Image 1: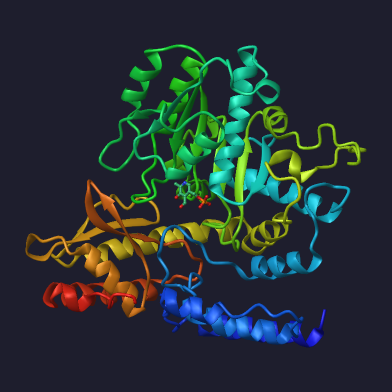
Image 2 (image 1 turned 90 degrees about the vertical axis):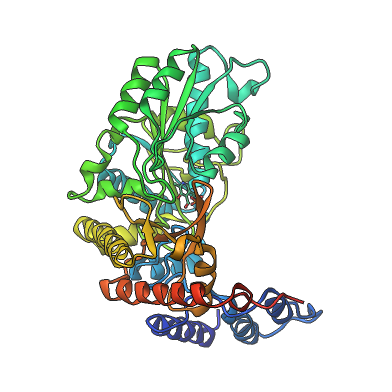
Length: 474
Ligand SMILES: Cc1ncc(COP(=O)(O)O)c(C=O)c1O
Protein backbone atom coordinates (compact mmCIF):
# COMPACT_ATOMS: atom_id res chain seq x y z
CA UNK A 1 0.00 0.00 0.00
CA UNK A 2 1.34 3.37 -1.01
CA UNK A 3 2.00 5.36 2.20
CA UNK A 4 1.46 8.63 0.30
CA UNK A 5 -2.04 7.51 -0.64
CA UNK A 6 -2.78 6.53 2.94
CA UNK A 7 -1.59 9.99 3.98
CA UNK A 8 -3.74 11.67 1.34
CA UNK A 9 -6.76 9.60 2.38
CA UNK A 10 -6.24 10.68 5.98
CA UNK A 11 -6.10 14.33 4.84
CA UNK A 12 -9.36 13.95 2.91
CA UNK A 13 -10.98 12.39 5.96
CA UNK A 14 -9.65 15.13 8.25
CA UNK A 15 -10.97 17.84 5.91
CA UNK A 16 -14.35 16.15 5.91
CA UNK A 17 -14.52 16.00 9.69
CA UNK A 18 -13.29 19.60 10.00
CA UNK A 19 -16.12 20.70 7.71
CA UNK A 20 -18.84 19.05 9.79
CA UNK A 21 -19.87 21.98 12.01
CA UNK A 22 -20.80 24.20 9.06
CA UNK A 23 -21.13 21.77 6.21
CA UNK A 24 -24.46 21.67 4.41
CA UNK A 25 -26.28 18.60 5.72
CA UNK A 26 -28.28 17.58 2.68
CA UNK A 27 -26.87 16.45 -0.65
CA UNK A 28 -26.30 19.07 -3.29
CA UNK A 29 -26.35 17.03 -6.48
CA UNK A 30 -29.17 15.61 -8.56
CA UNK A 31 -29.38 12.02 -9.73
CA UNK A 32 -28.35 13.11 -13.22
CA UNK A 33 -25.38 15.05 -11.91
CA UNK A 34 -24.17 12.10 -9.85
CA UNK A 35 -24.60 9.71 -12.74
CA UNK A 36 -22.68 11.88 -15.11
CA UNK A 37 -19.91 12.39 -12.55
CA UNK A 38 -19.52 8.70 -11.79
CA UNK A 39 -20.42 7.05 -15.10
CA UNK A 40 -17.05 7.45 -16.77
CA UNK A 41 -15.78 4.97 -19.32
CA UNK A 42 -14.22 1.97 -17.62
CA UNK A 43 -10.61 1.96 -18.73
CA UNK A 44 -8.96 -1.09 -20.22
CA UNK A 45 -5.70 -0.11 -18.59
CA UNK A 46 -5.13 0.09 -14.84
CA UNK A 47 -5.27 3.59 -13.38
CA UNK A 48 -3.06 5.06 -10.66
CA UNK A 49 -4.72 4.42 -7.29
CA UNK A 50 -4.31 8.01 -6.14
CA UNK A 51 -6.04 9.36 -9.21
CA UNK A 52 -8.88 6.88 -8.75
CA UNK A 53 -9.37 8.00 -5.15
CA UNK A 54 -9.13 11.74 -5.91
CA UNK A 55 -11.64 11.41 -8.74
CA UNK A 56 -13.98 9.28 -6.65
CA UNK A 57 -13.93 11.90 -3.90
CA UNK A 58 -14.64 14.72 -6.33
CA UNK A 59 -17.49 12.80 -7.97
CA UNK A 60 -19.29 11.71 -4.81
CA UNK A 61 -18.68 14.76 -2.61
CA UNK A 62 -21.75 16.75 -3.80
CA UNK A 63 -24.00 13.73 -3.29
CA UNK A 64 -22.91 12.97 0.25
CA UNK A 65 -25.51 13.52 2.94
CA UNK A 66 -23.64 14.57 6.03
CA UNK A 67 -24.96 11.89 8.34
CA UNK A 68 -22.02 12.58 10.66
CA UNK A 69 -23.30 16.14 11.10
CA UNK A 70 -24.57 17.12 14.54
CA UNK A 71 -27.66 18.41 12.76
CA UNK A 72 -28.51 15.26 10.85
CA UNK A 73 -31.79 13.86 12.24
CA UNK A 74 -32.84 11.58 9.39
CA UNK A 75 -34.23 8.05 9.80
CA UNK A 76 -32.37 6.67 12.86
CA UNK A 77 -28.68 7.08 12.06
CA UNK A 78 -25.84 7.44 14.52
CA UNK A 79 -22.54 9.19 13.92
CA UNK A 80 -19.23 7.49 14.62
CA UNK A 81 -17.20 7.99 17.77
CA UNK A 82 -13.52 8.57 17.07
CA UNK A 83 -12.08 5.25 18.21
CA UNK A 84 -14.76 3.33 16.31
CA UNK A 85 -14.00 5.18 13.07
CA UNK A 86 -10.27 4.61 13.50
CA UNK A 87 -10.82 0.94 14.32
CA UNK A 88 -13.09 0.66 11.30
CA UNK A 89 -10.34 1.99 9.03
CA UNK A 90 -7.95 -0.54 10.48
CA UNK A 91 -10.53 -3.27 9.99
CA UNK A 92 -10.17 -2.62 6.26
CA UNK A 93 -6.41 -2.42 6.49
CA UNK A 94 -6.09 -5.68 8.44
CA UNK A 95 -8.76 -7.26 6.21
CA UNK A 96 -9.45 -10.15 8.54
CA UNK A 97 -12.07 -12.65 7.46
CA UNK A 98 -13.95 -12.76 10.72
CA UNK A 99 -15.81 -15.92 9.79
CA UNK A 100 -13.69 -18.17 11.94
CA UNK A 101 -11.14 -18.23 14.70
CA UNK A 102 -8.69 -20.11 12.49
CA UNK A 103 -8.49 -17.27 9.96
CA UNK A 104 -8.88 -14.33 12.33
CA UNK A 105 -8.01 -15.08 15.95
CA UNK A 106 -7.75 -11.44 17.06
CA UNK A 107 -11.03 -10.55 15.36
CA UNK A 108 -12.73 -13.51 17.03
CA UNK A 109 -11.52 -12.57 20.49
CA UNK A 110 -12.22 -8.82 20.07
CA UNK A 111 -15.74 -9.78 19.00
CA UNK A 112 -16.10 -12.20 21.91
CA UNK A 113 -15.18 -9.46 24.38
CA UNK A 114 -17.29 -6.81 22.62
CA UNK A 115 -20.30 -9.14 22.75
CA UNK A 116 -19.80 -9.71 26.49
CA UNK A 117 -19.65 -5.96 27.00
CA UNK A 118 -22.79 -5.46 24.92
CA UNK A 119 -24.73 -7.86 27.15
CA UNK A 120 -23.36 -6.06 30.17
CA UNK A 121 -24.30 -2.52 29.10
CA UNK A 122 -27.70 -3.62 27.78
CA UNK A 123 -28.49 -5.48 31.00
CA UNK A 124 -29.18 -8.77 29.19
CA UNK A 125 -28.33 -12.30 30.39
CA UNK A 126 -24.55 -12.72 30.42
CA UNK A 127 -24.68 -16.20 28.88
CA UNK A 128 -26.87 -15.24 25.89
CA UNK A 129 -25.61 -15.93 22.36
CA UNK A 130 -24.63 -12.82 20.38
CA UNK A 131 -23.96 -12.31 16.69
CA UNK A 132 -22.85 -9.17 14.88
CA UNK A 133 -24.86 -8.74 11.68
CA UNK A 134 -25.04 -6.08 8.99
CA UNK A 135 -27.98 -4.38 10.69
CA UNK A 136 -31.16 -4.85 12.64
CA UNK A 137 -33.03 -6.49 9.78
CA UNK A 138 -30.49 -9.29 9.70
CA UNK A 139 -30.45 -9.34 13.51
CA UNK A 140 -34.21 -10.03 13.34
CA UNK A 141 -33.58 -12.74 10.77
CA UNK A 142 -30.90 -14.31 12.95
CA UNK A 143 -32.83 -14.20 16.22
CA UNK A 144 -36.09 -15.32 14.61
CA UNK A 145 -34.24 -18.23 12.96
CA UNK A 146 -33.28 -19.29 16.49
CA UNK A 147 -36.93 -18.91 17.55
CA UNK A 148 -38.08 -20.98 14.58
CA UNK A 149 -35.52 -23.66 15.45
CA UNK A 150 -36.49 -23.91 19.12
CA UNK A 151 -40.27 -23.83 18.66
CA UNK A 152 -40.26 -26.41 15.88
CA UNK A 153 -37.69 -28.65 17.58
CA UNK A 154 -39.94 -28.64 20.66
CA UNK A 155 -42.80 -29.69 18.37
CA UNK A 156 -40.68 -32.57 17.05
CA UNK A 157 -39.75 -30.94 13.75
CA UNK A 158 -36.20 -30.48 12.38
CA UNK A 159 -36.62 -27.28 10.37
CA UNK A 160 -32.94 -27.03 9.48
CA UNK A 161 -33.04 -30.46 7.80
CA UNK A 162 -36.60 -30.61 6.53
CA UNK A 163 -37.53 -27.00 5.91
CA UNK A 164 -41.05 -25.80 6.48
CA UNK A 165 -42.84 -28.22 4.11
CA UNK A 166 -45.36 -29.99 6.35
CA UNK A 167 -44.05 -28.35 9.50
CA UNK A 168 -46.42 -27.46 12.34
CA UNK A 169 -47.64 -23.91 11.72
CA UNK A 170 -45.96 -21.19 13.77
CA UNK A 171 -48.27 -18.38 14.86
CA UNK A 172 -46.61 -14.97 14.71
CA UNK A 173 -47.92 -11.90 16.55
CA UNK A 174 -46.56 -8.50 15.62
CA UNK A 175 -47.64 -5.04 16.76
CA UNK A 176 -49.52 -2.97 14.18
CA UNK A 177 -46.70 -0.42 14.30
CA UNK A 178 -43.86 -2.93 13.91
CA UNK A 179 -40.92 -1.90 11.76
CA UNK A 180 -40.93 -3.03 8.15
CA UNK A 181 -37.75 -5.07 8.67
CA UNK A 182 -39.58 -7.47 10.99
CA UNK A 183 -41.82 -8.44 8.09
CA UNK A 184 -38.83 -8.75 5.77
CA UNK A 185 -37.12 -11.12 8.21
CA UNK A 186 -40.28 -13.22 8.57
CA UNK A 187 -40.56 -13.41 4.77
CA UNK A 188 -36.98 -14.58 4.39
CA UNK A 189 -37.49 -17.23 7.07
CA UNK A 190 -40.49 -18.72 5.29
CA UNK A 191 -42.75 -17.63 8.14
CA UNK A 192 -44.54 -15.25 5.81
CA UNK A 193 -45.34 -11.61 6.33
CA UNK A 194 -48.98 -11.92 5.22
CA UNK A 195 -50.06 -14.57 7.73
CA UNK A 196 -48.83 -12.58 10.72
CA UNK A 197 -51.48 -11.53 13.25
CA UNK A 198 -51.30 -7.79 13.71
CA UNK A 199 -51.86 -6.78 17.31
CA UNK A 200 -53.61 -3.45 17.86
CA UNK A 201 -51.44 -0.47 18.74
CA UNK A 202 -52.31 2.62 20.77
CA UNK A 203 -51.94 6.23 19.64
CA UNK A 204 -48.18 6.18 20.31
CA UNK A 205 -47.63 2.92 18.44
CA UNK A 206 -47.39 0.62 21.48
CA UNK A 207 -48.77 -2.87 21.11
CA UNK A 208 -51.93 -3.30 23.21
CA UNK A 209 -51.20 -6.15 25.61
CA UNK A 210 -54.93 -6.77 26.04
CA UNK A 211 -55.30 -7.47 22.33
CA UNK A 212 -52.24 -9.72 22.40
CA UNK A 213 -53.74 -11.65 25.32
CA UNK A 214 -56.97 -12.17 23.40
CA UNK A 215 -55.18 -13.35 20.28
CA UNK A 216 -52.79 -15.69 22.08
CA UNK A 217 -55.71 -17.27 23.93
CA UNK A 218 -57.62 -17.83 20.69
CA UNK A 219 -55.29 -20.57 19.42
CA UNK A 220 -52.64 -23.10 20.31
CA UNK A 221 -49.30 -24.28 18.96
CA UNK A 222 -45.85 -22.72 18.55
CA UNK A 223 -45.99 -18.92 18.73
CA UNK A 224 -43.65 -15.96 18.34
CA UNK A 225 -44.46 -12.50 19.66
CA UNK A 226 -42.45 -9.57 18.31
CA UNK A 227 -42.42 -6.65 20.75
CA UNK A 228 -40.87 -3.26 20.12
CA UNK A 229 -38.70 -0.95 22.18
CA UNK A 230 -38.66 2.28 20.22
CA UNK A 231 -41.27 2.81 17.51
CA UNK A 232 -39.49 4.36 14.53
CA UNK A 233 -41.61 7.55 14.51
CA UNK A 234 -42.47 8.09 18.16
CA UNK A 235 -39.84 6.10 20.09
CA UNK A 236 -42.72 4.48 22.01
CA UNK A 237 -41.89 1.46 24.12
CA UNK A 238 -44.13 -1.60 24.43
CA UNK A 239 -45.33 -2.75 27.83
CA UNK A 240 -42.62 -5.37 28.26
CA UNK A 241 -43.60 -6.72 31.69
CA UNK A 242 -47.12 -7.49 30.42
CA UNK A 243 -45.94 -8.89 27.09
CA UNK A 244 -43.24 -11.16 28.53
CA UNK A 245 -45.70 -12.40 31.15
CA UNK A 246 -48.21 -13.30 28.42
CA UNK A 247 -45.49 -15.04 26.43
CA UNK A 248 -44.55 -17.10 29.47
CA UNK A 249 -48.16 -18.09 30.10
CA UNK A 250 -48.65 -19.21 26.49
CA UNK A 251 -45.19 -20.73 25.91
CA UNK A 252 -44.57 -18.13 23.17
CA UNK A 253 -41.11 -16.92 22.14
CA UNK A 254 -40.74 -13.21 22.81
CA UNK A 255 -38.51 -11.36 20.37
CA UNK A 256 -37.77 -7.65 20.84
CA UNK A 257 -37.08 -5.12 18.10
CA UNK A 258 -34.86 -2.73 20.03
CA UNK A 259 -33.01 -1.30 17.03
CA UNK A 260 -32.36 1.95 18.87
CA UNK A 261 -34.59 1.86 21.95
CA UNK A 262 -32.74 -1.01 23.60
CA UNK A 263 -29.87 1.39 24.25
CA UNK A 264 -32.02 3.10 26.88
CA UNK A 265 -31.03 0.13 29.05
CA UNK A 266 -27.45 1.46 29.01
CA UNK A 267 -28.51 4.51 31.01
CA UNK A 268 -29.30 4.14 34.72
CA UNK A 269 -31.59 7.17 34.36
CA UNK A 270 -33.59 5.68 31.47
CA UNK A 271 -33.42 1.97 32.26
CA UNK A 272 -36.81 2.07 33.96
CA UNK A 273 -38.41 2.80 30.58
CA UNK A 274 -37.44 -0.65 29.31
CA UNK A 275 -38.33 -2.51 32.45
CA UNK A 276 -39.03 -6.17 31.74
CA UNK A 277 -37.12 -6.26 28.46
CA UNK A 278 -34.50 -8.65 29.84
CA UNK A 279 -37.24 -11.27 30.32
CA UNK A 280 -37.59 -11.75 26.54
CA UNK A 281 -36.08 -14.64 24.58
CA UNK A 282 -34.27 -12.67 21.89
CA UNK A 283 -33.38 -9.12 21.00
CA UNK A 284 -32.27 -7.28 17.87
CA UNK A 285 -30.51 -3.96 17.97
CA UNK A 286 -28.00 -1.84 16.07
CA UNK A 287 -24.54 -0.67 17.00
CA UNK A 288 -24.64 1.69 13.99
CA UNK A 289 -27.47 3.59 15.61
CA UNK A 290 -27.04 4.68 19.21
CA UNK A 291 -23.64 3.18 19.94
CA UNK A 292 -22.30 5.43 17.17
CA UNK A 293 -20.30 2.78 15.35
CA UNK A 294 -19.91 3.43 11.61
CA UNK A 295 -22.04 1.35 9.25
CA UNK A 296 -22.56 -1.46 9.36
CA UNK A 297 -23.28 -3.34 12.54
CA UNK A 298 -26.43 -4.91 13.95
CA UNK A 299 -26.59 -7.16 16.99
CA UNK A 300 -28.63 -10.37 17.38
CA UNK A 301 -28.95 -11.66 20.92
CA UNK A 302 -30.58 -14.94 21.89
CA UNK A 303 -31.05 -16.13 25.48
CA UNK A 304 -30.78 -19.82 24.51
CA UNK A 305 -27.42 -19.77 22.75
CA UNK A 306 -27.79 -23.38 21.61
CA UNK A 307 -30.86 -22.42 19.54
CA UNK A 308 -28.87 -19.72 17.81
CA UNK A 309 -25.91 -21.90 16.86
CA UNK A 310 -28.28 -24.70 15.82
CA UNK A 311 -30.09 -22.31 13.48
CA UNK A 312 -26.88 -20.92 11.94
CA UNK A 313 -24.40 -23.82 12.05
CA UNK A 314 -22.38 -22.74 9.02
CA UNK A 315 -19.54 -25.25 9.28
CA UNK A 316 -21.60 -28.45 9.21
CA UNK A 317 -19.94 -30.77 6.70
CA UNK A 318 -17.14 -28.36 5.75
CA UNK A 319 -14.20 -30.69 6.22
CA UNK A 320 -11.62 -28.08 5.29
CA UNK A 321 -12.62 -25.84 8.21
CA UNK A 322 -10.55 -26.50 11.34
CA UNK A 323 -12.72 -27.61 14.26
CA UNK A 324 -12.48 -25.55 17.47
CA UNK A 325 -9.68 -26.81 19.68
CA UNK A 326 -10.78 -25.19 22.91
CA UNK A 327 -13.67 -22.84 23.59
CA UNK A 328 -12.74 -20.32 20.92
CA UNK A 329 -15.47 -18.30 19.27
CA UNK A 330 -16.11 -18.81 15.58
CA UNK A 331 -17.96 -15.57 14.79
CA UNK A 332 -19.94 -17.06 11.92
CA UNK A 333 -21.58 -19.63 14.20
CA UNK A 334 -23.76 -16.77 15.45
CA UNK A 335 -24.83 -15.06 12.20
CA UNK A 336 -26.05 -16.00 8.71
CA UNK A 337 -22.82 -15.04 6.96
CA UNK A 338 -19.84 -17.33 6.44
CA UNK A 339 -17.02 -14.97 5.45
CA UNK A 340 -17.44 -11.50 6.81
CA UNK A 341 -16.05 -8.20 7.99
CA UNK A 342 -14.54 -8.00 11.48
CA UNK A 343 -17.28 -5.84 12.98
CA UNK A 344 -16.08 -6.59 16.49
CA UNK A 345 -13.13 -4.17 16.23
CA UNK A 346 -15.17 -0.94 15.96
CA UNK A 347 -17.75 -2.16 18.49
CA UNK A 348 -14.95 -2.97 20.93
CA UNK A 349 -13.36 0.44 20.30
CA UNK A 350 -16.63 2.38 20.70
CA UNK A 351 -17.47 0.69 23.99
CA UNK A 352 -13.98 1.31 25.36
CA UNK A 353 -13.88 4.93 24.25
CA UNK A 354 -17.27 5.70 25.76
CA UNK A 355 -17.15 3.48 28.80
CA UNK A 356 -20.37 2.72 30.66
CA UNK A 357 -20.74 6.31 31.79
CA UNK A 358 -19.98 7.86 28.41
CA UNK A 359 -22.52 5.60 26.73
CA UNK A 360 -25.18 6.45 29.29
CA UNK A 361 -24.45 10.16 28.85
CA UNK A 362 -24.62 9.87 25.07
CA UNK A 363 -28.05 8.23 25.21
CA UNK A 364 -29.33 10.69 27.82
CA UNK A 365 -27.98 13.69 25.88
CA UNK A 366 -29.77 12.60 22.70
CA UNK A 367 -33.03 12.20 24.64
CA UNK A 368 -32.59 15.62 26.27
CA UNK A 369 -31.91 17.15 22.84
CA UNK A 370 -35.04 15.49 21.43
CA UNK A 371 -37.11 16.91 24.29
CA UNK A 372 -35.62 20.34 23.68
CA UNK A 373 -36.43 20.10 19.98
CA UNK A 374 -40.02 19.20 20.85
CA UNK A 375 -40.25 22.17 23.22
CA UNK A 376 -38.68 24.62 20.77
CA UNK A 377 -41.06 23.59 17.99
CA UNK A 378 -44.14 23.32 20.20
CA UNK A 379 -43.73 26.97 21.24
CA UNK A 380 -44.83 27.87 17.73
CA UNK A 381 -48.61 27.56 17.34
CA UNK A 382 -48.19 26.31 13.76
CA UNK A 383 -46.47 23.16 15.07
CA UNK A 384 -48.05 20.18 16.81
CA UNK A 385 -45.78 17.63 18.44
CA UNK A 386 -47.63 14.37 17.92
CA UNK A 387 -45.73 12.07 20.26
CA UNK A 388 -44.76 11.85 23.89
CA UNK A 389 -41.02 12.43 23.52
CA UNK A 390 -39.97 9.48 25.65
CA UNK A 391 -36.70 8.76 23.84
CA UNK A 392 -34.85 10.41 20.96
CA UNK A 393 -37.67 10.72 18.42
CA UNK A 394 -39.83 13.78 17.78
CA UNK A 395 -42.87 13.56 15.52
CA UNK A 396 -44.26 16.91 14.47
CA UNK A 397 -46.79 18.34 12.06
CA UNK A 398 -47.10 21.86 10.69
CA UNK A 399 -50.53 23.15 9.84
CA UNK A 400 -50.80 26.92 9.82
CA UNK A 401 -54.44 27.86 9.19
CA UNK A 402 -55.40 24.20 9.41
CA UNK A 403 -53.65 23.14 6.18
CA UNK A 404 -51.04 20.43 6.67
CA UNK A 405 -47.93 21.72 4.89
CA UNK A 406 -45.49 19.31 6.57
CA UNK A 407 -44.31 17.63 3.38
CA UNK A 408 -43.41 21.02 1.92
CA UNK A 409 -41.58 21.98 5.10
CA UNK A 410 -39.59 18.74 5.08
CA UNK A 411 -38.55 19.31 1.46
CA UNK A 412 -37.68 22.95 2.12
CA UNK A 413 -35.59 22.12 5.20
CA UNK A 414 -33.70 19.45 3.29
CA UNK A 415 -33.02 21.93 0.50
CA UNK A 416 -31.95 24.73 2.81
CA UNK A 417 -29.24 22.58 4.38
CA UNK A 418 -28.92 23.66 8.03
CA UNK A 419 -30.26 20.31 9.13
CA UNK A 420 -31.81 17.22 7.61
CA UNK A 421 -34.71 15.02 8.56
CA UNK A 422 -37.28 12.98 6.72
CA UNK A 423 -41.03 12.84 6.50
CA UNK A 424 -43.45 10.09 7.36
CA UNK A 425 -47.16 9.53 7.65
CA UNK A 426 -48.89 9.36 11.00
CA UNK A 427 -52.59 8.53 11.09
CA UNK A 428 -52.49 8.80 7.32
CA UNK A 429 -51.29 12.42 7.32
CA UNK A 430 -47.80 13.77 6.57
CA UNK A 431 -45.57 14.36 9.59
CA UNK A 432 -41.91 15.22 10.14
CA UNK A 433 -39.77 12.80 12.10
CA UNK A 434 -36.68 13.99 13.92
CA UNK A 435 -34.27 11.45 15.34
CA UNK A 436 -31.39 12.52 17.57
CA UNK A 437 -28.86 9.73 17.51
CA UNK A 438 -25.45 11.36 17.09
CA UNK A 439 -22.95 11.90 19.90
CA UNK A 440 -22.02 15.32 18.41
CA UNK A 441 -25.47 16.91 18.70
CA UNK A 442 -25.65 19.71 21.26
CA UNK A 443 -28.41 21.97 22.55
CA UNK A 444 -26.97 24.69 20.34
CA UNK A 445 -27.49 22.48 17.26
CA UNK A 446 -31.05 21.81 18.34
CA UNK A 447 -31.90 25.50 18.80
CA UNK A 448 -30.28 26.39 15.50
CA UNK A 449 -32.13 23.58 13.73
CA UNK A 450 -35.48 24.43 15.32
CA UNK A 451 -35.25 28.01 14.11
CA UNK A 452 -34.20 26.84 10.63
CA UNK A 453 -37.24 24.55 10.54
CA UNK A 454 -39.61 27.27 11.70
CA UNK A 455 -38.18 29.66 9.13
CA UNK A 456 -39.07 27.11 6.46
CA UNK A 457 -42.57 26.80 7.91
CA UNK A 458 -42.96 30.53 7.34
CA UNK A 459 -41.63 30.31 3.81
CA UNK A 460 -43.65 27.20 2.93
CA UNK A 461 -46.81 28.77 4.27
CA UNK A 462 -46.40 31.98 2.31
CA UNK A 463 -44.70 30.89 -0.91
CA UNK A 464 -46.90 29.17 -3.51
CA UNK A 465 -46.20 25.44 -3.65
CA UNK A 466 -44.78 25.48 -7.18
CA UNK A 467 -42.01 27.86 -6.11
CA UNK A 468 -40.88 25.69 -3.19
CA UNK A 469 -40.33 22.61 -5.30
CA UNK A 470 -37.24 21.60 -7.19
CA UNK A 471 -37.47 22.02 -10.95
CA UNK A 472 -38.47 18.76 -12.62
CA UNK A 473 -35.47 16.65 -13.59
CA UNK A 474 -34.78 16.30 -17.23
C1 LIG B 1 -37.40 0.01 15.13
C2 LIG B 1 -36.47 -0.37 14.00
N1 LIG B 1 -36.29 -1.65 13.70
C3 LIG B 1 -35.47 -2.05 12.73
C4 LIG B 1 -34.76 -1.13 11.99
C5 LIG B 1 -33.88 -1.60 10.86
O1 LIG B 1 -32.53 -1.44 11.16
P1 LIG B 1 -31.41 -1.69 10.03
O2 LIG B 1 -31.56 -0.57 9.07
O3 LIG B 1 -30.13 -1.66 10.78
O4 LIG B 1 -31.69 -3.01 9.40
C6 LIG B 1 -34.89 0.22 12.26
C7 LIG B 1 -34.18 1.24 11.47
O5 LIG B 1 -34.33 2.42 11.66
C8 LIG B 1 -35.76 0.62 13.32
O6 LIG B 1 -35.92 1.91 13.65
